[in-house]
Amino acid sequence: MARRTRSLSDETSVTCPYCYESQLLVVDPETEGEMVQDCDVCCQPWRVWVSRDADGDLDVQVSRAQ
Image: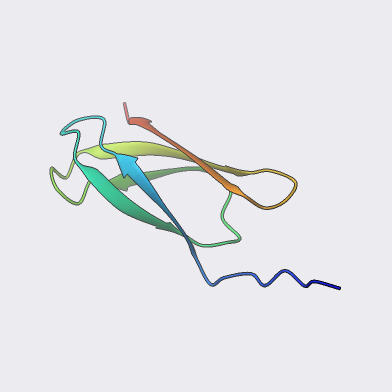
């Protein structure tokens, strides 16, 4: 029987909606929902939506925060 091991964090590449730089976003495995985070390059605020499917696979969407 295979056991699924949860990592301490999930990583995904996102593109800043302001400066269009690609960046690595590290997400805690327990995190879901909406949050605001600043771009590491241009410091503009992002609205980040984190969701997971039934298998726990990460889905992240980033847009400009208003």
